[in-house]
Image (cartoon, rainbow, N blue to C red; front, side, top):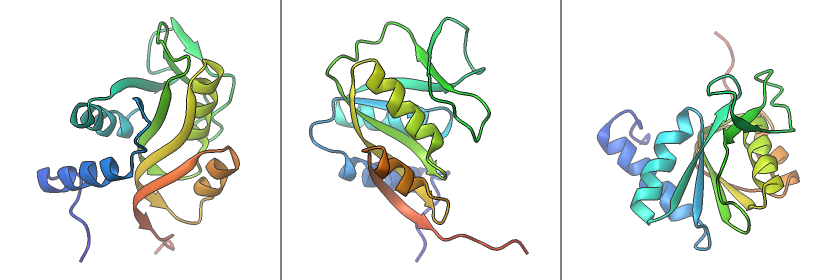
Length: 156
């Protein structure tokens, strides 16, 4: 039986509970990636008593931000976060709705690490298989946790 859609109250609750079960116990801060990961990260932070920061794609927020040195090639832009976050020594997990190529999550981890955070986990509601995201993140020292795997589909 397929899992309920996160677009329904039951499905959203199921996804949040499944993500929560995969959170490492040492994590104290969640980084939600714009746009799909923001809601899940906020809900998980509230549910688990954790901190929350938002990660935005460049161009979606003010110019007064910290900009990533890593390019997010599939978007043609980098990622950014607001200045002033106390990240030194924090144990941060990345949260997003869908893992595809892993470029945004890897750029996020690189930015967080550059700012002093320990970022070794990324959690996703869905993983689109066959796009190399899991492998890319694993090579970058990030453990990947997903709720549901979606096989590649052929165009009709």
